[in-house]
Amino acid sequence: MKKIVLYLLALTFTCTAALAAGGLDGFLSNLNVQARADLTGFAGRLSAQFGVPGAQVTATLGTVREPADAFMIYQLGQMSHQPYERVLQTYQANQGKGWGVMAKSLGIKPGSAEFHALKRGDFSLTGKPAHGEKGKGQGKGKGKGHNK
Image (cartoon, rainbow, N blue to C red):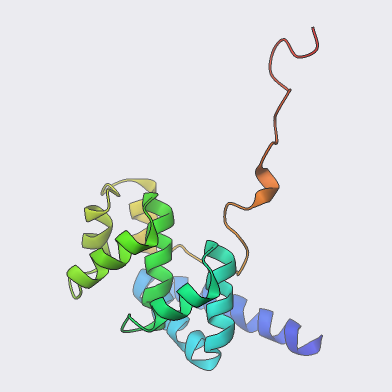
């Protein structure tokens, strides 16, 4: 239990430091440090957060230059509502051009909230689903005219 608490504190510190240390580049740099320290845990958190099977995450990690690139592939897929395979193809075709160029080619508009979040590196790897099952069905039956 003590290890888990220490790990969560380190993770929180790392993510907070990333935001203060230089936007997206700082976030990705710190994410790479975390991934290299525990690649299996990193892959598990990617799988859980983005709803991608573990085997596919492992395959993606094998095709990218840095572990944080796998995170960005799944994050951009979520932001652009594109399948990660399409984002991976865009990554492979545009290596070296930057995440902003890739985001634009996936339909994320410069000036949008998503694009600003990208530039700030306003992301986190929590290992929890971003759009989980919890929200499904909420609000049903609460509109006008219900039970009249």
